[in-house]
Length: 425
Ligand code: PGA
Ligand code: ZN
Image (cartoon, rainbow, N blue to C red; front, top):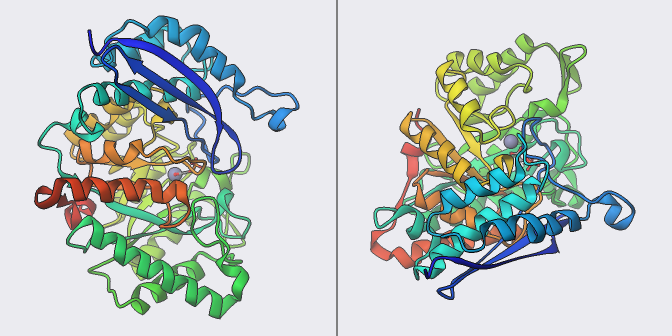
């Protein structure tokens, strides 16, 4: 009874780019409540769940009043009275009410916020933190953060084609140590960029990383390495991860990639990556090729000795796609973004599948984010070992890191840190 959903309310709020997004509040009979806000991507995969937006003049067409109405008119009446503890049944109902392949009727933004609010309400009704509700008593491992400290691609206005240059402080002894190390490198990077390229090079992009006016991949990598060594760290402490988001610089007509002021075929891009892997301490490469060329992920995976090859746009948190690409051995793991698939249970299926197969599940934010910090709990609940949630700057990014610091503090002596094993194949 206590877990039964008593009420569901939606409203329009704002994300970190100033775009409207949807917040959903779910209340239970037992007095529990859960509130969740949908994030929004800029470099989206073509098979992602589709957000419902209003079009028209207000907010340049980006309003979500239709999605708010869809929650209030369709989802709420369908799930009120259901048991929030059995969130997978609630999600099945959400999927049934939507009835489309890509959540386009009620909107992936509406289903995501509702589904996440349901698990949070169930946890609250249990008087448990979300990570304990989902993961039980055994969940105690804090993830290694992948911190995006140089922004390029569609997240910045510079000439860098690689979208994200991340530092990965896996050599830390604890999560809070990893945050300290990353912040020290971030500050060192700021100093270096300012000295070398002038003060405007330290303006930040969508995910809080610096957006210096560079156009060559190697310049950004060199800046990162200078910052890592300048802060007193070595390869044993901090690795580098890249999200190429390569669909964004791929021309499907001519099958060419525009990068570093060159146009490369997929074989040439493969060689480009292999030479980067030889000369830099890159431990993870996400979306190195366009969605149209999944088999190239496999080529790179076979040839890269250490770097993990991770899918994002090609897997879109779909367990069907993840299973397909694991079977063909194209990927070492996948990015998990609940709003790519539209319900928490479907994302949970993908996480479980990846972990069962011994692959990586990288819990991730979107470039358009909010103060919602649910993903911090998801990463700990399933002990995925990896989380990707931007630079240690801007409130919508630090909200997740701060929540992880709270969880670490709450666990006290029982807290563990995923560390180096999180990045080993
Ligand atoms: P997005 O990018 O949130 O803008 O889609 C993040 C990513 O590609 O990982
Ligand atoms: Zn990505």
